[in-house]
Image (cartoon, rainbow, N blue to C red):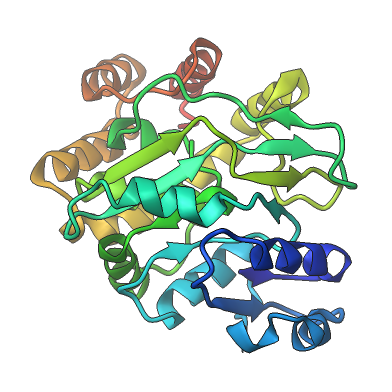
Length: 296
């Protein structure tokens, strides 16, 4: 769990961990920046004997999660947690049950939909569906995995721990995990059943990706160059991770990186042949606008 100024909701999240059907868990919390009382909340919580604390790097949420991935011992199931959600009781047990369907030496990642709520965990609505199968061609241009729902099997935790040692920066940790696991030829499982309550409030780092307001915000990110900056950060990290990828996905990565530098007609042709895509027709339209404007 990466924590920053999370005292207002942390205790409720810790409470939801104590009601998990899967009872064999340990929590590592990385507290980033000035502590607003989170350390004391953890020390006083009933489950404090299961929780260890480390200090974050002070460089934001993505860097804090990367820090955790470098520090926590691999070879176990890893579940990623935000500080202000509320896990449903089956969160861990359902994820592990699904992941056990995969061969033990194949990296696998589980993620699910969630119930988006207001600040008081009321007014539930389910997060968007993911109609297309997960793939590296999708992961290059879109994140479909909410980090607060992600669980990795032991093989994936070993892969992530190794790759994180050499990566300096990522846009967001969950997008990088989706890219890394698919790039390496691993399995990504999407569950349509929600696993947690996702608290939507004014301090969310990115926020729920549903509704017209969210679509307008993402279009603005294309137009103002934010999305292009994200792509450049991601591609730099993926270039570092390329030794872990399948030969096919290394070729795909090189093709996308090369296409971004080409004139419009060549760029469009190369990227269409590469098969990059997003999950919905609207999202695909926005992606091709970014390609046409040279902002992918």
